[in-house]
Image (cartoon, rainbow, N blue to C red; front, top):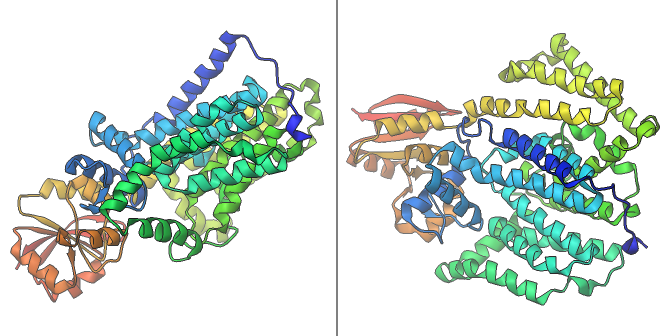
Length: 551
């Protein structure tokens, strides 16, 4: 019976050696998640949106109702917005402060992976799994961005791990901590955390034939309600439309409907493999080297990753970051496989699957490097688009090819971790290049430098929360359906929305100075309502920031 199985774990090293494991994780995590964290500009839409919500919490001194563009924004609960505002209050309204909650959550997630792996298999496997997680390209990139997903993943993973230890290792005192972490996950992203935890815990309990009553924790549910319900009930009391909008439109509607971010059913499987790079090539070997039912810990990690993948694949609305909670269990499974291989001594040559995986990885790496230097005609356009990542691309491809090659030559699995760390140093540099065209920082700062009392900012079929963050000014919005629509209905007196161009033109004529944010091809149409000189100040993607000078 799997329920009575206790896996054989490695012998624990002396305490001073384990401190070296932890110190190594801290050093690697600090370098990966905090080096040049504040250099790239905040990128729209997510980073600009969440930074602006945090700024408006401090501006309006309203910690209970999040606002975006000075109207209520209730798509998600407030915990991440509170953390961002607290970071701004302590460090100033900078890129570093905006991203700090995500980076700290990513680092904490690495230590959480170590703690869970240690409880399952011992320090060596835990250390390898934690480093695999830290060097997954998707985990590293999302740990350096201001989104809800990394902090949500931290609290959800903490809840899942503690719940498993309470169930499988008979440690019921961990249940209150598990439900407390689950409550924090709900306060970041809503009831999806509760659904995922229920599916994962419930599936493991049924498969291992444990009594379902072990999941019934009345006192823990009371703790959960005390932490979660006050904010939801207060917002519902203030805005009676809230529950219908939050539950039906933003959660159930996104899951069942295809109006927002529609993707095919198979979308997340290749994406997950991409987020796991460079470890993707070893994932089939790590998952197949033992049957999942041979060890209840492995079974739980399989279910964890599988439920997340299947649940979000069934959703009609999909975003890449939704799948992030599946990375930790996969990284732990891979770390355990590497640690077992490293302990095997001469048994290394018996790992046919690992050697085959490394050969495929090496062949793919060298093929990509050859194609980069001697690209055939059909690949030339793709390489031209990749020129954005020069000079990092050739170095990255070389490291990608050398990592499995050197490991095969020297028969040392932990060389893979060194290669992955080397590859990971390129991720922050690549993100800086991406931010050059994804961030509205230049436009926002240009607007701030030209601002004067009585001025106004008008968005014609466009809205950029990042420009609002960098300039400190709200948008007056014309002819745009957006995420602000529900807040607009709740605050019809805001005066920030125009029903048509004639009203926007009348508003502009009454102000001392007006700045417009719009696509260039729309300017001739708007000039029919408001003739005059429009001076370009900055360009952001397909839009111009224009200063209106009148006739």
